[in-house]
Image 1: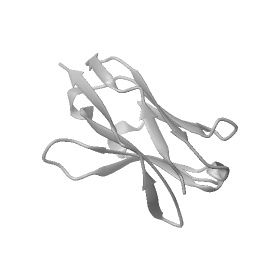
Image 2 (image 1 turned 90 degrees about the vertical axis):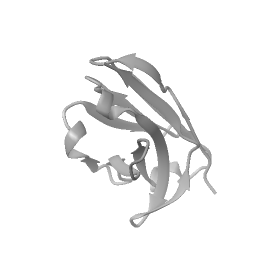
Image 3 (image 1 turned 60 degrees about the vertical axis):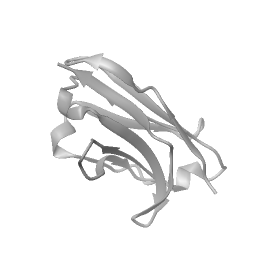
Image 4 (image 1 turned 90 degrees about the horizontal axis):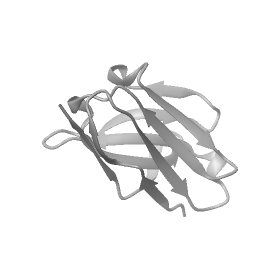
Length: 116
């Protein structure tokens, strides 16, 4: 069982930056693929970035060059650095953990609002 707690969301002006954190419980954090998803009002949830247990990463095209995912296995934490934010990045951001392509554990979500 893994519990995930996100933090770091908030309100920022367009062009600004935020860093989200996701702290995980459990002793097997390093074996999980970690993903950041987001869901905007009226839209489907989408995978924004993924950091696999093997170290590979995936970025949604619209965030490439602006968002960076890192993980600290010693702290059981994954981070999402978001730069050059636009109003289109406004959403609830969720951290998730899983294995073999399936995300089994989810955080409660943190709101990111970007004003124009």
